[in-house]
Length: 470
Image (cartoon, rainbow, N blue to C red):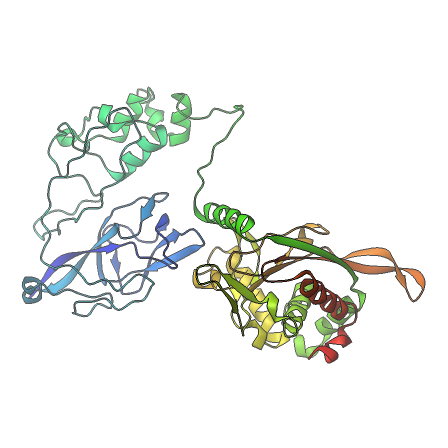
């Protein structure tokens, strides 16, 4: 005999021990029926936006967190009402992430696999909180188990707190949208009297509290407008805007500071006549063999870097401080710095050294398209061995790039410009590029870095030199 039960889905570790993620958007709502592995949410880690698949097949019973909320790994974010077996429920069995009975989840994301708790129906219990010492932002939405909806009870469209009246120390009764509005307005719900059923605090109660609820139109105004009317947020013309440091920006800042203060950076520059490379690029684009492939200067420079590394492997290494070892990589995971709406990311192409020019072109196109869409996976953002940043697309000639943590070198490509240049003992208008190579001086000596840069420049100045390199 089957019965329904409530299962919580806790935020998993999405890779490399990340401790928190921000809910970007829910793809489901309370009452929706979902299937196993259906995408239910988008979350932003410190590195990327990740789609979360459902570990259960069932009905969404409650969403515990709102978009924009930063949630710690292991906290419940959604509850599902699923079909179960009375016998299994009574014996402590559970339904795994694959929807089958069992005591463990089959991992379909990093962090799935924790042993399930006993699957008896969780009892709803009163939740008490210490009263704040001073007015503060409203507490986050509770992440407690939600009681299953019985057939005889009408389903609620919004999850509501279950305590009776708000007693001292208890969370005020309100719906998640109202708590979100109060948070945006900087209103402490403890100070707001509730006029709804059984003392429920409504949207109008919050707007009345800030002085905007007397007008009928006020209830329809965006939270930001109401907040400005109440003088609780920045008004137009103020001299500062403050943005929380989180997500990709927070991770990038920490990584760059760690890199700058742990690895002794050296940067060398080489300006090269790349006219032959640009001519080769034009011929390849016109070739039938490369029809449908996106070829750019970055494609050819990337291939040249991979070839040059064969003779200069010290630039494809890592300094292991904990074990006091130099780790030499016998493969190349080529990182490509990508500017995205969410900040700078450096996804990498796995085993790029084994790829043909066509394969490398396809991989670069996929990498950049995925990064710009904010869909880069945590796996693609880890494990890089050397990186390239193309600052030339912004019209910049040269720079001093900071090493991606754990890598020995990074190459910056400058803009390709037509300039007067010495050519066959005469001055001619040639296409010129500046290469900027930063490297970790603990791993790479000046001579090694210089010879790598020299070989790379020689290949770009005369692509036929590749025959002498391989």
